[in-house]
Amino acid sequence: MIGPDTVDTMPEKTLDALLDHGTIARTVDADLRGAHQVLDDLARAGVDMEDVSAVLEDQGVSAFVKSFDELLQSLSDKANVLS
Image (cartoon, rainbow, N blue to C red; front, side, top):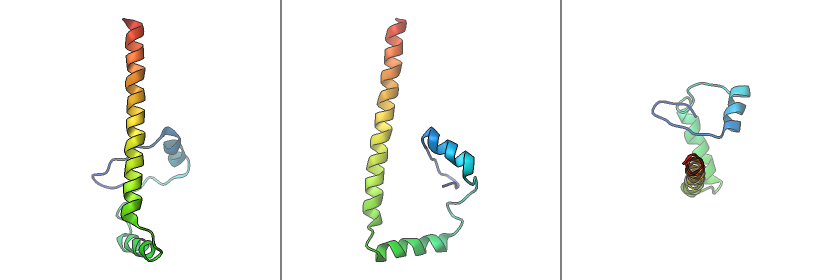
C-alpha cells in the first residue's frame, strides 16, 4: 500500500518479494469506488472489518514489541561483551 502520508514496515522477505514481482506505485487511493465496493461486499458476507482491523492491529503491535525487545536484548548482550 503506497500513498501519501503512509508508513509501512514489512519483513525483509516480504520486501524482497515486492521487489521481485510487485508493482511500486501509488495504490492506496487509486480506486476508491472499488475499495468501497469491496468493503460493502465484505460486510454483506458477514465480515466485521472493525474486528479484523482490531485483531491485525493487536497482532502487529505484539510482533513489533517482540522484535524491539529482541533488538534491545541483542544490544544489551553486545554491550556486556564489550564492557
